[in-house]
Image (cartoon, rainbow, N blue to C red; front, side, top):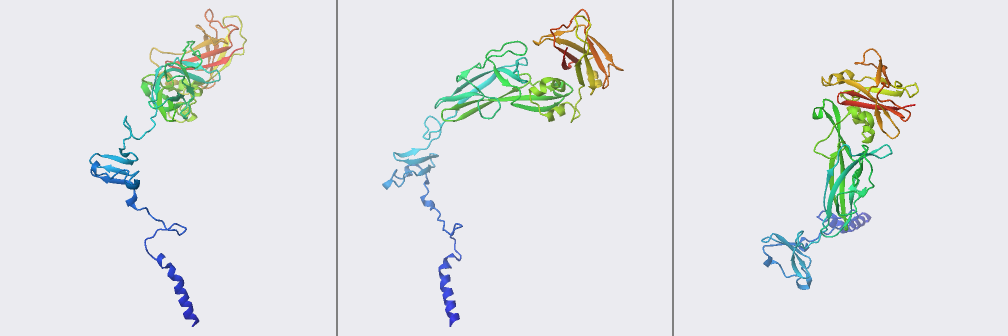
Length: 394
Protein backbone atom coordinates (compact mmCIF):
# COMPACT_ATOMS: atom_id res chain seq x y z
CA UNK A 1 0.00 0.00 0.00
CA UNK A 2 2.82 2.41 0.86
CA UNK A 3 4.53 1.67 -2.51
CA UNK A 4 1.36 2.44 -4.49
CA UNK A 5 0.91 5.73 -2.62
CA UNK A 6 4.53 6.71 -3.37
CA UNK A 7 4.11 6.01 -7.12
CA UNK A 8 0.90 8.05 -7.25
CA UNK A 9 2.65 11.01 -5.56
CA UNK A 10 5.57 10.80 -8.01
CA UNK A 11 3.24 10.88 -11.03
CA UNK A 12 1.43 13.93 -9.65
CA UNK A 13 4.76 15.78 -9.16
CA UNK A 14 5.86 15.23 -12.80
CA UNK A 15 2.61 16.43 -14.38
CA UNK A 16 3.57 20.18 -14.21
CA UNK A 17 6.83 19.38 -16.04
CA UNK A 18 5.14 17.79 -19.01
CA UNK A 19 5.21 21.06 -20.96
CA UNK A 20 9.00 21.19 -20.70
CA UNK A 21 9.50 17.75 -22.24
CA UNK A 22 9.85 18.51 -25.94
CA UNK A 23 8.28 21.42 -27.87
CA UNK A 24 9.95 24.47 -29.54
CA UNK A 25 9.90 27.04 -26.72
CA UNK A 26 13.13 29.06 -26.30
CA UNK A 27 14.23 29.86 -22.77
CA UNK A 28 16.93 32.00 -21.17
CA UNK A 29 19.56 30.44 -18.92
CA UNK A 30 17.30 31.38 -16.00
CA UNK A 31 14.42 29.38 -17.50
CA UNK A 32 12.33 32.32 -18.72
CA UNK A 33 10.57 32.02 -22.06
CA UNK A 34 11.79 34.25 -24.90
CA UNK A 35 8.88 35.62 -26.88
CA UNK A 36 9.83 36.47 -30.48
CA UNK A 37 8.30 39.57 -32.04
CA UNK A 38 5.58 38.90 -34.55
CA UNK A 39 7.00 39.94 -37.92
CA UNK A 40 3.56 41.22 -38.86
CA UNK A 41 4.19 44.13 -36.49
CA UNK A 42 7.57 45.14 -37.97
CA UNK A 43 7.23 48.71 -39.38
CA UNK A 44 8.76 47.92 -42.80
CA UNK A 45 6.47 47.07 -45.68
CA UNK A 46 6.28 46.75 -49.45
CA UNK A 47 3.78 48.12 -52.00
CA UNK A 48 3.77 48.21 -55.80
CA UNK A 49 2.92 51.91 -56.18
CA UNK A 50 2.54 54.99 -54.02
CA UNK A 51 -1.21 54.67 -54.57
CA UNK A 52 -1.14 51.43 -52.62
CA UNK A 53 0.13 53.12 -49.46
CA UNK A 54 -2.36 52.92 -46.60
CA UNK A 55 -3.79 55.95 -44.84
CA UNK A 56 -1.16 57.95 -42.96
CA UNK A 57 -1.11 58.38 -40.06
CA UNK A 58 -4.27 56.21 -40.18
CA UNK A 59 -6.96 55.51 -37.62
CA UNK A 60 -5.56 55.81 -34.11
CA UNK A 61 -2.15 56.66 -35.70
CA UNK A 62 -1.62 52.94 -36.26
CA UNK A 63 0.61 53.54 -39.34
CA UNK A 64 2.70 56.28 -37.80
CA UNK A 65 6.44 55.56 -38.11
CA UNK A 66 6.03 52.73 -40.59
CA UNK A 67 8.45 52.50 -43.53
CA UNK A 68 7.29 51.27 -46.96
CA UNK A 69 9.34 50.41 -50.02
CA UNK A 70 7.57 51.60 -53.18
CA UNK A 71 8.65 49.36 -56.06
CA UNK A 72 7.55 51.57 -58.97
CA UNK A 73 9.34 54.63 -57.55
CA UNK A 74 12.32 52.65 -56.18
CA UNK A 75 12.29 54.60 -52.93
CA UNK A 76 11.27 54.37 -49.32
CA UNK A 77 8.47 56.40 -47.79
CA UNK A 78 7.96 56.95 -44.10
CA UNK A 79 4.66 57.67 -42.42
CA UNK A 80 5.11 60.99 -40.60
CA UNK A 81 2.63 63.02 -38.56
CA UNK A 82 2.20 65.20 -41.67
CA UNK A 83 1.66 62.27 -44.06
CA UNK A 84 3.84 60.12 -46.27
CA UNK A 85 7.38 61.45 -46.78
CA UNK A 86 9.92 60.16 -49.33
CA UNK A 87 13.17 59.36 -47.51
CA UNK A 88 16.07 61.09 -49.31
CA UNK A 89 19.63 61.06 -47.94
CA UNK A 90 22.01 63.76 -49.19
CA UNK A 91 21.53 66.55 -51.70
CA UNK A 92 19.66 69.83 -51.43
CA UNK A 93 16.34 68.05 -50.97
CA UNK A 94 17.50 65.74 -48.23
CA UNK A 95 14.90 64.73 -45.70
CA UNK A 96 17.55 63.24 -43.42
CA UNK A 97 19.93 65.84 -42.02
CA UNK A 98 23.57 64.73 -41.72
CA UNK A 99 26.63 66.79 -40.79
CA UNK A 100 28.98 67.26 -43.74
CA UNK A 101 32.69 67.07 -43.00
CA UNK A 102 34.83 70.08 -43.99
CA UNK A 103 36.13 70.44 -47.53
CA UNK A 104 39.94 70.75 -47.49
CA UNK A 105 42.71 71.23 -50.01
CA UNK A 106 46.45 71.65 -49.31
CA UNK A 107 49.76 71.28 -51.15
CA UNK A 108 53.46 71.85 -50.57
CA UNK A 109 54.32 74.55 -53.05
CA UNK A 110 57.97 75.25 -52.19
CA UNK A 111 60.83 73.43 -50.45
CA UNK A 112 64.32 72.28 -51.38
CA UNK A 113 67.44 70.80 -49.81
CA UNK A 114 68.76 74.23 -48.76
CA UNK A 115 65.68 74.99 -46.67
CA UNK A 116 66.96 73.43 -43.45
CA UNK A 117 67.16 75.10 -40.03
CA UNK A 118 69.26 74.11 -37.02
CA UNK A 119 66.90 73.91 -34.02
CA UNK A 120 69.80 74.55 -31.65
CA UNK A 121 69.15 71.40 -29.62
CA UNK A 122 70.87 68.82 -31.81
CA UNK A 123 67.88 68.45 -34.15
CA UNK A 124 66.88 70.13 -37.40
CA UNK A 125 63.74 71.33 -39.16
CA UNK A 126 62.62 71.16 -42.75
CA UNK A 127 61.40 74.56 -43.91
CA UNK A 128 58.60 74.45 -46.46
CA UNK A 129 55.69 76.45 -47.78
CA UNK A 130 52.17 75.04 -47.74
CA UNK A 131 49.02 76.54 -49.22
CA UNK A 132 45.59 75.48 -47.99
CA UNK A 133 41.88 76.22 -48.21
CA UNK A 134 39.14 74.83 -45.98
CA UNK A 135 35.38 75.41 -45.81
CA UNK A 136 32.36 73.91 -44.10
CA UNK A 137 29.16 74.02 -46.17
CA UNK A 138 26.84 73.44 -43.22
CA UNK A 139 28.66 75.19 -40.40
CA UNK A 140 32.03 76.66 -39.49
CA UNK A 141 35.63 75.51 -39.24
CA UNK A 142 36.48 75.14 -35.55
CA UNK A 143 40.19 74.28 -35.89
CA UNK A 144 42.64 73.83 -38.73
CA UNK A 145 46.35 73.14 -39.02
CA UNK A 146 49.25 70.70 -39.45
CA UNK A 147 49.60 67.39 -37.63
CA UNK A 148 53.24 66.55 -38.39
CA UNK A 149 53.46 63.34 -36.33
CA UNK A 150 50.13 61.84 -37.50
CA UNK A 151 48.66 61.39 -34.01
CA UNK A 152 45.36 63.14 -34.79
CA UNK A 153 46.30 66.37 -32.95
CA UNK A 154 47.11 69.68 -34.61
CA UNK A 155 50.73 70.64 -33.89
CA UNK A 156 50.90 73.88 -35.93
CA UNK A 157 47.55 75.73 -36.11
CA UNK A 158 46.47 77.94 -39.00
CA UNK A 159 45.00 81.32 -38.10
CA UNK A 160 42.69 81.50 -41.12
CA UNK A 161 40.71 79.14 -43.32
CA UNK A 162 42.89 79.72 -46.38
CA UNK A 163 46.44 80.90 -46.71
CA UNK A 164 50.00 80.54 -47.96
CA UNK A 165 52.25 81.37 -45.02
CA UNK A 166 52.97 80.32 -41.47
CA UNK A 167 52.47 82.39 -38.33
CA UNK A 168 55.57 80.80 -36.81
CA UNK A 169 58.50 83.00 -35.92
CA UNK A 170 60.86 83.11 -38.94
CA UNK A 171 64.20 81.33 -38.58
CA UNK A 172 67.35 81.55 -40.61
CA UNK A 173 68.29 78.53 -42.69
CA UNK A 174 71.68 76.92 -42.19
CA UNK A 175 72.90 78.45 -45.46
CA UNK A 176 72.13 81.93 -44.11
CA UNK A 177 69.00 82.56 -46.19
CA UNK A 178 65.76 83.76 -44.61
CA UNK A 179 62.46 82.05 -45.40
CA UNK A 180 59.80 84.17 -43.75
CA UNK A 181 56.40 82.52 -43.63
CA UNK A 182 57.81 78.99 -44.04
CA UNK A 183 56.57 76.18 -41.81
CA UNK A 184 59.14 74.48 -39.59
CA UNK A 185 58.63 70.72 -39.64
CA UNK A 186 60.92 68.58 -37.42
CA UNK A 187 63.23 66.28 -39.37
CA UNK A 188 62.98 63.44 -36.88
CA UNK A 189 59.23 62.65 -37.07
CA UNK A 190 56.87 61.50 -39.79
CA UNK A 191 59.50 59.53 -41.73
CA UNK A 192 59.09 56.27 -43.62
CA UNK A 193 62.39 54.69 -44.64
CA UNK A 194 62.95 52.45 -47.66
CA UNK A 195 66.09 50.41 -48.35
CA UNK A 196 67.23 50.53 -51.97
CA UNK A 197 70.16 49.11 -53.94
CA UNK A 198 71.47 50.88 -57.05
CA UNK A 199 68.74 53.51 -56.91
CA UNK A 200 69.07 56.15 -59.66
CA UNK A 201 72.24 54.47 -60.97
CA UNK A 202 74.38 55.45 -57.99
CA UNK A 203 75.87 51.93 -57.76
CA UNK A 204 75.56 51.68 -53.99
CA UNK A 205 73.05 51.11 -51.24
CA UNK A 206 70.97 54.00 -50.00
CA UNK A 207 67.99 54.89 -47.85
CA UNK A 208 65.05 56.77 -49.33
CA UNK A 209 63.23 58.79 -46.68
CA UNK A 210 59.63 59.72 -47.35
CA UNK A 211 58.26 62.42 -45.07
CA UNK A 212 54.55 62.69 -44.39
CA UNK A 213 52.35 65.13 -42.53
CA UNK A 214 48.63 65.75 -42.32
CA UNK A 215 46.71 68.96 -42.81
CA UNK A 216 43.47 68.53 -40.87
CA UNK A 217 40.27 70.54 -40.47
CA UNK A 218 37.62 70.09 -37.74
CA UNK A 219 34.15 71.64 -38.00
CA UNK A 220 31.89 72.93 -35.24
CA UNK A 221 30.07 69.58 -35.08
CA UNK A 222 33.29 67.59 -34.62
CA UNK A 223 33.63 66.14 -38.13
CA UNK A 224 37.26 65.89 -39.28
CA UNK A 225 38.83 65.94 -42.74
CA UNK A 226 42.43 64.77 -43.22
CA UNK A 227 44.63 65.69 -46.16
CA UNK A 228 47.96 63.79 -46.09
CA UNK A 229 51.02 65.31 -47.80
CA UNK A 230 54.12 63.28 -48.70
CA UNK A 231 57.47 64.46 -50.03
CA UNK A 232 61.20 63.78 -49.99
CA UNK A 233 62.56 64.32 -46.49
CA UNK A 234 66.06 64.98 -47.79
CA UNK A 235 65.48 67.18 -50.82
CA UNK A 236 62.16 68.74 -49.92
CA UNK A 237 59.25 68.98 -52.32
CA UNK A 238 59.61 67.64 -55.85
CA UNK A 239 58.85 64.83 -58.22
CA UNK A 240 61.82 62.67 -57.22
CA UNK A 241 63.51 61.37 -54.10
CA UNK A 242 67.16 61.89 -53.28
CA UNK A 243 69.03 58.85 -51.94
CA UNK A 244 70.76 59.03 -48.57
CA UNK A 245 73.94 56.98 -48.82
CA UNK A 246 76.15 55.64 -46.07
CA UNK A 247 78.54 58.52 -46.79
CA UNK A 248 75.87 61.06 -45.98
CA UNK A 249 74.88 59.18 -42.83
CA UNK A 250 78.44 59.34 -41.52
CA UNK A 251 77.73 62.93 -40.51
CA UNK A 252 74.60 64.17 -38.74
CA UNK A 253 72.14 62.50 -41.11
CA UNK A 254 71.41 59.49 -38.92
CA UNK A 255 70.50 61.49 -35.82
CA UNK A 256 68.78 64.29 -37.75
CA UNK A 257 66.25 61.89 -39.28
CA UNK A 258 66.09 59.51 -36.30
CA UNK A 259 67.07 56.57 -38.52
CA UNK A 260 66.64 53.17 -36.81
CA UNK A 261 69.80 51.19 -36.15
CA UNK A 262 68.57 48.31 -38.33
CA UNK A 263 68.48 50.62 -41.36
CA UNK A 264 71.88 52.03 -40.45
CA UNK A 265 73.35 48.54 -40.21
CA UNK A 266 71.91 47.63 -43.59
CA UNK A 267 73.11 50.67 -45.55
CA UNK A 268 76.59 50.61 -43.96
CA UNK A 269 77.11 46.91 -44.71
CA UNK A 270 77.01 45.65 -41.12
CA UNK A 271 74.02 43.38 -41.78
CA UNK A 272 74.10 43.32 -45.59
CA UNK A 273 76.37 43.06 -48.61
CA UNK A 274 76.34 46.85 -49.06
CA UNK A 275 79.77 48.47 -49.47
CA UNK A 276 81.40 49.62 -46.24
CA UNK A 277 82.71 53.16 -46.04
CA UNK A 278 86.04 53.86 -44.28
CA UNK A 279 85.88 54.44 -40.55
CA UNK A 280 88.17 57.30 -39.46
CA UNK A 281 89.11 59.17 -36.33
CA UNK A 282 90.29 62.77 -36.25
CA UNK A 283 92.09 64.47 -33.36
CA UNK A 284 93.87 67.72 -32.75
CA UNK A 285 97.62 67.62 -33.34
CA UNK A 286 99.58 67.94 -30.09
CA UNK A 287 101.57 70.88 -31.52
CA UNK A 288 100.23 74.28 -30.43
CA UNK A 289 98.75 76.62 -33.02
CA UNK A 290 101.06 79.58 -33.82
CA UNK A 291 100.98 82.59 -36.10
CA UNK A 292 103.16 80.72 -38.56
CA UNK A 293 102.03 79.32 -41.90
CA UNK A 294 103.01 75.66 -41.56
CA UNK A 295 101.47 74.55 -38.27
CA UNK A 296 100.50 70.91 -37.79
CA UNK A 297 96.72 71.00 -37.43
CA UNK A 298 95.33 67.52 -36.86
CA UNK A 299 95.85 63.76 -37.25
CA UNK A 300 93.50 61.70 -39.42
CA UNK A 301 93.67 57.96 -38.64
CA UNK A 302 92.21 55.01 -40.55
CA UNK A 303 90.38 52.84 -38.01
CA UNK A 304 88.88 50.53 -40.65
CA UNK A 305 89.47 51.01 -44.39
CA UNK A 306 86.18 49.28 -45.26
CA UNK A 307 85.89 48.80 -49.04
CA UNK A 308 88.43 51.56 -49.76
CA UNK A 309 89.82 49.99 -52.95
CA UNK A 310 86.32 49.44 -54.36
CA UNK A 311 85.35 53.06 -53.73
CA UNK A 312 88.50 54.22 -55.52
CA UNK A 313 87.78 51.93 -58.47
CA UNK A 314 84.27 53.36 -58.82
CA UNK A 315 85.54 56.91 -59.40
CA UNK A 316 85.51 58.35 -62.92
CA UNK A 317 88.81 58.52 -64.76
CA UNK A 318 89.08 62.27 -64.23
CA UNK A 319 88.49 62.04 -60.47
CA UNK A 320 90.96 61.57 -57.65
CA UNK A 321 90.82 60.66 -54.03
CA UNK A 322 91.77 63.76 -52.09
CA UNK A 323 91.55 65.39 -48.67
CA UNK A 324 90.62 68.98 -47.95
CA UNK A 325 90.68 70.87 -44.67
CA UNK A 326 88.92 73.87 -43.15
CA UNK A 327 89.52 76.05 -40.14
CA UNK A 328 86.18 76.87 -38.55
CA UNK A 329 85.59 79.88 -36.31
CA UNK A 330 83.09 79.90 -33.42
CA UNK A 331 80.55 81.57 -35.72
CA UNK A 332 80.64 78.56 -38.03
CA UNK A 333 82.57 80.26 -40.83
CA UNK A 334 84.99 77.86 -42.50
CA UNK A 335 88.33 78.92 -44.03
CA UNK A 336 89.44 76.52 -46.73
CA UNK A 337 93.16 75.72 -46.54
CA UNK A 338 93.87 75.81 -50.23
CA UNK A 339 97.46 74.54 -50.06
CA UNK A 340 97.19 72.38 -46.95
CA UNK A 341 99.76 69.63 -46.60
CA UNK A 342 98.94 65.98 -45.83
CA UNK A 343 101.79 63.72 -44.77
CA UNK A 344 100.96 60.01 -44.91
CA UNK A 345 102.47 57.63 -42.37
CA UNK A 346 101.94 54.21 -43.85
CA UNK A 347 102.85 51.84 -46.66
CA UNK A 348 100.53 52.79 -49.54
CA UNK A 349 98.38 55.90 -49.49
CA UNK A 350 96.11 54.44 -52.19
CA UNK A 351 95.21 51.44 -50.02
CA UNK A 352 95.71 52.52 -46.38
CA UNK A 353 95.37 49.96 -43.61
CA UNK A 354 93.95 50.23 -40.10
CA UNK A 355 96.21 52.31 -37.86
CA UNK A 356 97.85 54.32 -40.67
CA UNK A 357 97.29 58.07 -40.62
CA UNK A 358 97.78 61.49 -42.20
CA UNK A 359 99.19 64.54 -40.46
CA UNK A 360 97.31 67.61 -41.69
CA UNK A 361 99.28 70.89 -41.77
CA UNK A 362 98.93 74.41 -43.08
CA UNK A 363 100.29 74.75 -46.57
CA UNK A 364 102.07 78.10 -46.51
CA UNK A 365 100.94 81.24 -48.30
CA UNK A 366 97.22 80.42 -48.61
CA UNK A 367 94.69 79.65 -45.91
CA UNK A 368 96.38 80.21 -42.59
CA UNK A 369 94.51 79.28 -39.40
CA UNK A 370 94.75 81.76 -36.56
CA UNK A 371 93.59 81.94 -32.97
CA UNK A 372 90.02 82.84 -34.01
CA UNK A 373 89.45 79.25 -35.19
CA UNK A 374 88.37 76.64 -32.63
CA UNK A 375 87.50 73.70 -34.89
CA UNK A 376 89.28 71.92 -37.71
CA UNK A 377 87.21 70.08 -40.31
CA UNK A 378 88.48 67.60 -42.84
CA UNK A 379 86.70 66.04 -45.82
CA UNK A 380 87.70 62.86 -47.65
CA UNK A 381 86.51 62.76 -51.24
CA UNK A 382 86.07 59.64 -53.35
CA UNK A 383 84.68 61.29 -56.46
CA UNK A 384 81.13 62.33 -55.58
CA UNK A 385 81.26 60.47 -52.27
CA UNK A 386 82.46 62.41 -49.27
CA UNK A 387 82.81 61.96 -45.55
CA UNK A 388 83.36 64.99 -43.32
CA UNK A 389 84.59 64.90 -39.72
CA UNK A 390 85.93 67.55 -37.39
CA UNK A 391 87.84 68.06 -34.15
CA UNK A 392 88.36 70.93 -31.75
CA UNK A 393 91.67 72.79 -31.92
CA UNK A 394 93.90 74.17 -29.21
